[in-house]
Length: 126
Length: 113
Image (tube, rainbow over all chains, first blue to last red; front, side):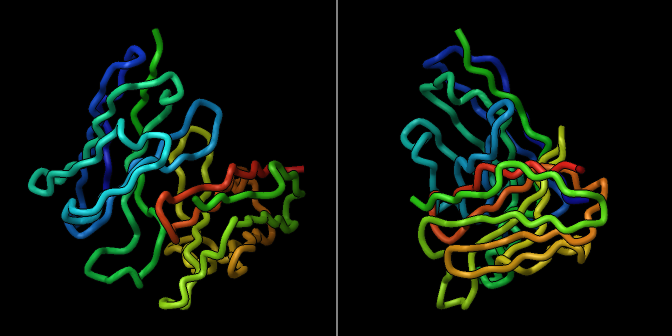
């Protein structure tokens, strides 16, 4: 079964740090770009960051650039999000999500994110 | 950055009727090298993560009922749900993956009238 399980969410103070993890199973992890997407309470979806299959290409939303760092360990089939200089507006449910199309397909097999975890909750509050 | 704008924000449709949700991008998301529009649609039910319905603007993801269809090109897109079922009550999002940062529309809440 293809599965993504996030962990690491907690209550943090403004200016603090957290590290989120996402454990992947059931698919060839190192063949896929992975993403973090967040959803503030009662709000819509916000794409946060992506990392390509081997980690040499990363992108960030403007709202987190310079504060968050995405990484992956293919040997552990895990994705991470290091979150520094946290702000109250970072409070959200953070989802890990897998790209539909494998890197081996060259981008022509589809787009979007087809597998999502259940999310981990980050609350930034003093 | 590309801004995605959905309309309406909410929609109430009778069971068995058709629902149409619109999505407009602030610039074209048609990639000529692939001859494809880099747009996806998602369905999110309460307490659940989003579910991918459609990619390339009009290709249904495996297992998605054929009452769901996507259309449009360039900057204007639509998601149509024919013969609305009770289980289709959800919030629907469009997303562009043409350029980084990727972006979602604000969501459209679909309810039963």
